Image 1 (cartoon, rainbow, N blue to C red):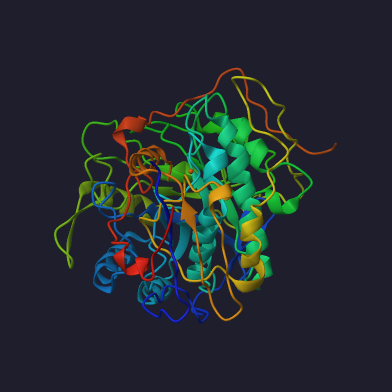
Image 2 (image 1 turned 90 degrees about the horizontal axis):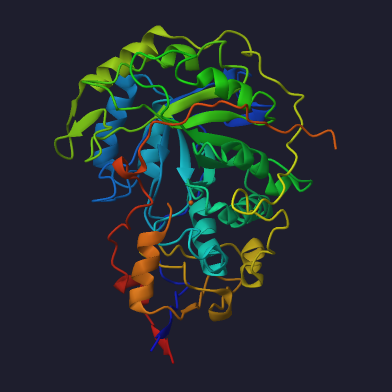
Length: 473
């Protein structure tokens, strides 16, 4: 028998202080113009030079931006490495991130943040059900935590939700989340922080996905930036051999910024040389790509790390760290605007193709229960370990008062189905259209060898959140 339970979060609860209340003004905002990023203060082209940052990986997933001691340790390493951006896959929106965000800003470092948690994300197995008001409340509450920091470069609405040829139908719901996030930002009076999607480099649908997320007459439903997780340059490869030249052709007419949201093939003997840096930050690629993020900062079981974490105050820098540091130091960004384009048109929507591309160009309406968030705000954050994937809208009711956020939600999932859902989730006219050539390089990344924020949940007890629990049978 399924147990329906209600979670009543009182407005007077002050335990959760995750929302950012004051703007961080120590770094200028990064804006989008055409297919590139620009520094809003200097007007200079901005190239992402960064790392993916989730210490602990999936086996011990924690919020890296909520621990001041950890941030002190790691920001010092970031400065030594010479980066300007980090990507974080999962945060706990009930926690205070101000100290870490200020440290990053003082070091000149921006954040790209995935808004999902392992338990609250679009499910590959039941995307329609997982797109519900409880899920959007979680996403919007995370936006509330970070939107006032000027060193937030952008939000990812999903990461590798499409990861093979048979789950392209999930794109419909991810694109709906993009739309809802952009509308929420505007409704709540936040700056229009870029919202994007981070795609797996799946040869059968990567171009279709790029076109789909950047198509249609509704600007809110189109992404503002597109990340590609690409591991095709291995060792001492080259612009041609790696397939980078092919990908320049794939995306040459794309109208928004593209960057490598993960790169750094580790299928090499010894340490990674990172020779791709010389091409990524050159005029070979700057007309289309705006830099990238190396996977990943901390060494986990997948052996992609730049450092070994010794304890809460120290790390051991590996040879990969030194190699990447040297490459970043010797390769400068292209001068001027790097040949960017401000005249490319958004893409034409790909047609439905059974077995190849099964995303619908007509998006689902936002769940009606979530509309109150636009006028009243998302309310108190629920944190991680809050399973929303089985909270289909028929089982969810929200009541947010003008004074605060009293949220009543109900779930009809059994404990076994919730566990299954958590394990199965992913982290997540004249218009130009990208076309794939007859030959294309494929990523050398092996999905089984990597783990990231979408693989497991942060171990945060729910008991504090279950104050005034109401059981509904």
